Image 1 (cartoon, one colour):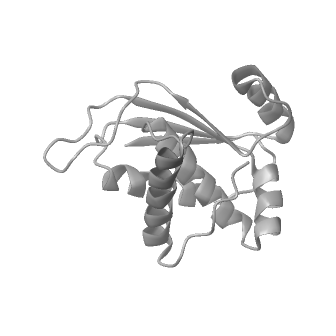
Image 2: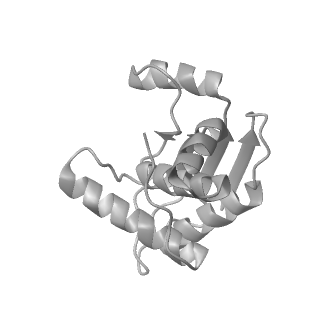
Image 3: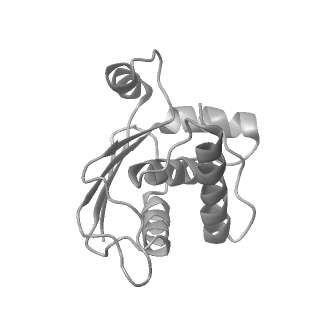
Length: 157
């Protein structure tokens, strides 16, 4: 898998952990080993511009996902096709604020947001109650297994 991280936020983060988590999730969801993913860490100003442009909502947000080839999870017998998953854009500044409010480390918040963003790239959503229940349950399960402990609770804006 090709997972590229580009930190434009000015905040130091554990980029190798984000890659390790993304690889773990993609393998667990049977995404083709030649799938490509980009993780961008943006400052609050850049994130606000993206949030306004793509979601028509004011202010910076914590995570945005930009799917490319609309890949979906596969199965052991039939993994997803190869392709471009897309981009996950994270804002460490917002993640730090949310982590402080929630009482867990910023590194765990970024892992939570990465999981959330990656599930969006794979077609999960939380617009309807049933969708939210499914997505957030899978999010907690994946992150708990990865961390080897209970995952932090959702803090998404």
